[in-house]
Image (cartoon, rainbow, N blue to C red; front, top):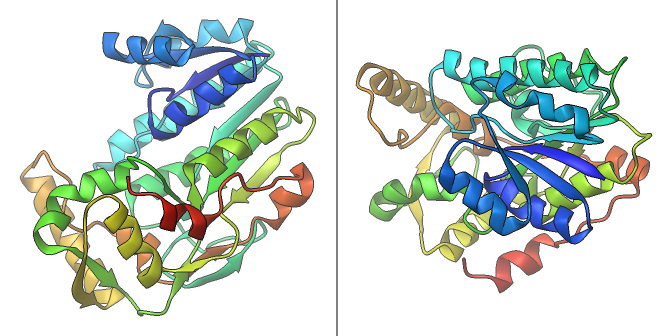
Amino acid sequence: MKIFVTGGTGFIGRNLIPRLVQKRHKVTAVARSAYGKSQLDLMGATPVDGNLASVSTFTSNFSKADAVIHLGAKTESWGLYNDFFEINVRASEEITGAASYHGVKKLIYLSCASVVCTGSPLFDVDEDYKPSGFPSDNYSKSKAIAEEKVRNASNRLNTVILRPAFVWGKQVPFIERLRHHTNRIGFPNIGKRGHQFSTCHVENIVEAIITALDQPDKSGTFYVTDGEPVAVKFFMPQLLLSHGLFAGRVNLPRSFALFMAGFFEVIWAIIPFRKTPPLTKNIVNILGSEATFSDNKFREVFSYKNRVQLEEELRSRRY
């Protein structure tokens, strides 16, 4: 199969493309720089020039593709909304339109479970759940709007929207961005100490993408998780430790953490520091209250099975 990938040099793309090449798919992927091209070459993909700020630079390549896998996004936990909108919403809408125009057989769009995290506790949420509003953080809000743009094209294009829960794995960007903070004060515990959340190892979301790709007649919106949820107080210290970091002893009530995140974001907007704020609304929304998701629908429709088991992976690796 001929597959075009956006975001091929990102965290998930770096894990996905080698698997696609291993399965003998012909992969083309967009690259913004000479370094990106060299990375794609090493993975066995054919690089093409382009970036999500100017989608027209690469969408002509869709005419040769059987499927488009749209991973590319602005994924930082903090930033100005207009920046998120241009990359996550506008680019996704244009990519979807171009895929439809060029007769692409399937579009797989990578969203996120946090599109429904608006602050209320979420227990075993499935695809029928509709939040009353948008998330307060700009990343999740932009992804929720982008989902609608992609879903609106489903009557003329076979689309699969995947919503992985908290994504983790070796060199996960979330941890790398926190490194300069956690080295000094440790990562705080947010919210009630016993609350749980759902996770999705990078190899499991890659497996989900390949599973969806291999069944071209099926479509829809689906959560993807590692299976059973896990307590944040159990998961986060082990994840941090596996990356050579540590969890702090500070416990922050969710309301106070959200207030502090808002305060930091205002300061960072006034004084454009290069590094991410020590606490953001996105982090509080994901880790600060119960957020568990059911991926039974995806498992049933696509006969999906995990490639990696959470506890075994977490205990056996030091990243």
